[in-house]
Image 1 (tube, rainbow, N blue to C red):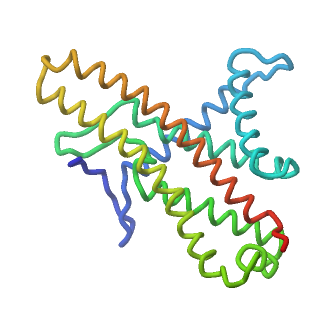
Image 2: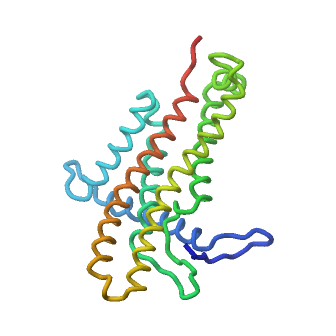
Image 3: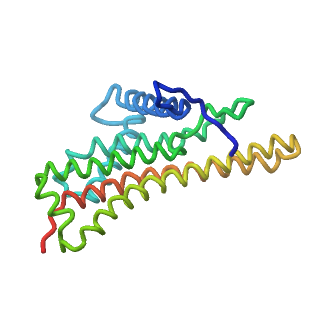
Length: 240
């Protein structure tokens, strides 16, 4: 796609203004959704309270499926917040497409940018190391995570950390970026062919939006699940 983003710089450091704006908007949407759905909670939930409780139970299930139940209180809030953020970030770009005449994009999914997904992945991998050190101490963590079951596997364990980071980030980026590329191509087809393309373009657009919503939801689930899997690797004591 021949698209550009808004850019700005602070001193010598340049920033993608479109991505920064969309990340901030995603955070605001997550905050207001949680705020709205948790107002006036009742002992017998109905309507919006049922919806937020379903999301909470769903995120709890991801934690308990990959970590011991005693860890639920430590990671449930992290998993719930991460899932909502990634879910909204994946799908927000499907709502509309705002492109200026000079091909500057003003609206896109934040996770369609590799730096966003790499940052999210780096944060999660870093947290696995930090919680591992907190659990076992620096020496115990290093021995448990890198020298067990066999010390000669140290180089492979180090490489594994980089591959975990890249696969976690690029899997999310690739799926969301590909979805937005095709939506843009369909929109450009309608622009170039005019009214003649409406009978074909509109059904294609609707079908691909529905499919992209499904893929975005699955990728949010995969991202948070793998994050907890990597966390469990660092918190589980390896016996030899």
